[in-house]
Amino acid sequence: MTTPPAVRIGALAPLTPPGWAEAGRHLLAGLELAVHETNAAGGVAGRPIELLVRDTAADPARAEAAVDELAGLGVAALAGEYHSVVARAAAGRADALGLPFLCSSAVLDALTDHPTDLVARIAPAQSLGWRGYADFLLGRLGPGRRRVAVAADPGLYWESGTRILREHVTAHGGEVLVLDARALGPEGVCDALAAAGATALLLLLGHPEPVVPLVRAVRRDPRLSGVLLGAPAGQPELPSWGALLGADGAGVPFLSYLPERLTPLGERVAAELRGRLGEEPSFVAHEGYDTITVLAEALRTRGTAPEKLAGAWPHVSVEGTRGPIRFSRVPGIGVWQWAWPPVRVADRDPAAPGRFRVRHTM
Image 1: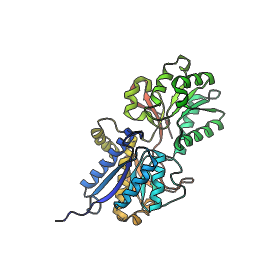
Image 2: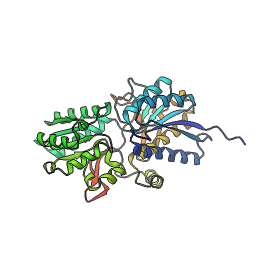
Image 3: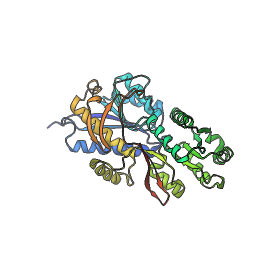
Image 4: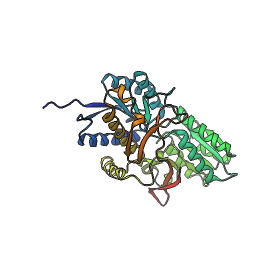
């Protein structure tokens, strides 16, 4: 008996530096688990899914080249990517080639230059999450104490996040000071924070460098004992943060895209992912699993030809690990969007840094 040909899906993820390889590993674990379970259940119309994985290493040019290669290999769709600027490059190239792309984890609002029916996204838009984070921050700091410093790397994602935070904080009587952490170094940032009388420092920086040395320096500076550290981009979510920083990494609020309680599917998937990863799965792993769940349903209902799959997004309705997933058009967002995944502010509990606390729900 002839084995039916596989349905190929291209997967993009940062698996080597300077990409955040830990996030890429979690994303890929979720993608692969969902492919395995889909194939075990009979695949798509009797055909197995084959995942063709390409490492983007946080390089937009490398991602564009991977999209070209995968299109040439006949993939039905693209999935994945964590870094927003890389996902934006991949989305633009996929759109130009007529190839559907379901983005798993990148949050940059402007994922494409113009509205397109080819691209959809699982992760929430940056403007939603970061405005909610600013609301949490304003509530914590209170009137008269809203002097917020931002230590930011260069780049579109960090600049966009800084702009969202500045607009929201200044509209409520606060101030935002931007510091060049790489130029100043950890001690220089501490001096600038003390001189400015900052009440919070937001870490819009790469992990582990330069963010880990900076956190250690702030925690050890007696002048800064009252400064709130925050990391809206989610660095404290992944296990290496806790392993590298221990107690110093606790009490640093971040954006998490996990609900307070997973769905029954989510609980089962989390257990499977825990076994595959050897550690607690992050929301990034769930985003990967949900991506393949959506694509498998779209392939079943619309067919495996890219031109047919491109129209699937508004018709998809599936149960994901974090709730029902449906896509819609959101003002200001040019792609089909799950509106919205769960968004919370969480941190590691100072009393037990391996445990997470919910600080704010949107």
